[in-house]
Image (cartoon, rainbow, N blue to C red; front, top):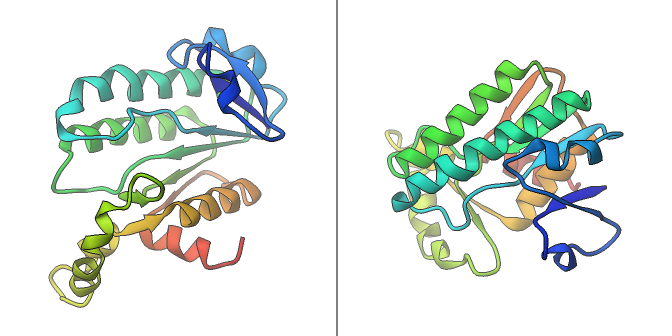
Length: 191
């Protein structure tokens, strides 16, 4: 397993993970470290997405995905994994639009890929949405809001990790999209 980090962040990666330094916006700085690999996981994005960060999404999320796809294609990666966002959504329009554009690039790349679509991931430093949990549960029982409530539901960091592990262990053949209910279901499989 290998992780790409910016210079100066090498110490932030622990465990058995090898570290490659490079620029996520320039595949030439890291593509030589991709092979041999079966799976490429793209986890780059603007931290703490917010509606006013539209320019940052266009400056980081989209170009980093392009660079990652170029490196994955050059290395003949068998399975590309991308963390997108639930769609459609009533808020965060630029974020959703950029992530949708990234998904279209992945689909046009010819690579087999799994696209995970969480809405909000609950974990350390990100617990405030828990106050909305009862509202989400209630909306899942109202016929006119059930689809949106499920699509835009909350998932835990443990559920996301379990879904990621499952997607790595079960590579897609073609394009596979896993939404919030799918992420929860994968987490319940006991991976």
